[in-house]
Every structure is written in structure tokens, then in C-alpha cells.
Length: 326
Image (cartoon, rainbow, N blue to C red):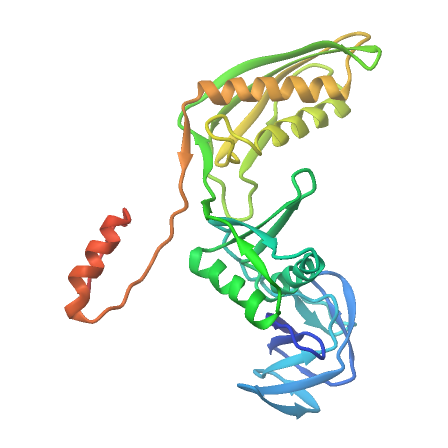
């Protein structure tokens, strides 16, 4: 068993850096990616010393080596024998806190930029990019301005892609400080037919645990509400949660409870229940003391003693809270 902990793009193919936790593996072997449930062909094994590579016939327990020939494996995946499947604990990556717009210098760079962003994403799981087909704008997101500055330098210096970077925007989120209940209805004629639905929701603060979704949804509606309408209500809630009531940022740390759903004998539809859920959600969040959340990071700073004062003042100016000095 081995864990992929880093990927480096190379002109001859990706180098998948792995640590072998048990057993032995030989070059030219077919192996199993138990995380993605796919088969991979291990072509070569390299022992890496900076830029120097030493060819290895096999790797064994405790070795840190680079595999060549893997096409689908990414950082955090487990590799193992075809017969003995095992999944090691995945690496957890923080969510981005800064977003910038990015566009190619020329039309010729457009496809090169798209390909380069895919490569950078494979190398760095804490880096994200997005393309909005409606506006035609691409954005990159990461762990700070320095992180995205390094990404832009890689694009221009190492990948020869001309780009223009926009101003950074902070990845805020929204939540609520209290609880509220609201009823939403959707009674309208669309597409030549009537749509009718009523939904009652309750929202309140929620502290998710590791692995939980930012919005926790519970269905406590009594009565004979059809399953297809229950699913439509949840989809409507989750869609509404992607844009909050204060500034349009995603909502997190929220519990939403479905209290009631009312069907019409003839004119109910999935569309009606999804829209009624959005109406109820927006009103409930607005009445539950919505708040803006800023990204927060724990930072450890090491500095010579003579710079302690200026560094402390700089952190304070940035609204940093100093918990301890040693």
C-alpha cells in the first residue's frame, strides 16, 4: 500500500510522489487505485534527489519515490495490490480564501491557459479555478495573494502563457445568528400549466463536523408528501444556500428543517416545490440575523527579537489576534 502525496508535471508525464507504507512494488506492475476504484499501470520508479533521478526496479516499505505512468491518480489517493484492497486516510486540504479573475493576453493563449490550469490543479489540490460560460470569465482561487502570485508566475515563466490577473476578492461566507421559521408559496401558471406548492422551513445555527456539508438539511414534515417533492424541496434549499441574503456569498454553518409541505390535488410539481423552498429559505435566513464570515487562519510567525515590535504592530494592523509570544 502507498499514498500519493504530491504530483509534479513533467515533459515525459506526471511524477506521482508516493510513500510506500507496506509491502513491495516492482516497476512494470499493474496496481489498483482503491480511492477511485481504477486500475493503473506503473511504468517506472524513480528515486528523487532534487533534479537527479535514480532508476529503481522496486520500492518497499518506508520508501519515498516517484511513480511514472499513472494516468488517473491524484494527491491523496491510495495505491495497493490488485487482490488486497486497502484505503489509507486521505489528506485534507483547506478551502480557498482569495479569488482573482484571470484572462489570456491573446486569443492564442486561451486554450494554452485552460490546459495549464488543469496541470496546476493536478499539482496543487489547494488551488482551484472556475470558468463561467455565461460571462466568459475565468477565476483562480487559493490560500492567499502570495499563493496566487506564485501560480501566475508559473503560468508566465514556466508554461509560457501570457495572462492578466484581476484584483483579489476575499472568499466571504454567510451564516445566521439566530433561528427563524418562514413559509414560502409558489402559485403561478408557467408553460401552459398551473404550479402550486407551499413549504414551511426552519433555519438555525449549526456547527458541522469534519466531513459534514456546510448546510445540514433535515426532513421532519408530517403528512403524505411525495418523495419526489421532498427531493425537490431539498434541491431548492441547497440551490438557495449558494447565495446568501447579505452580499450573495454562500451560506454555511446552517441547519435547515423542513416542517411542512402542502401539495395541491392537481397542480403540484417539482418546479413549484423547489421555488417555494427558495422563497421560504430566503425569508427565514433574512429573519434569523444573517452575518458575514471572514476566512480565519492560525499563523505561527518566527522573527529575530529586534523585529518583534514591527512584526507585532503589522499583525495588529491587519486585525490579527496574537494569542501567545515565546
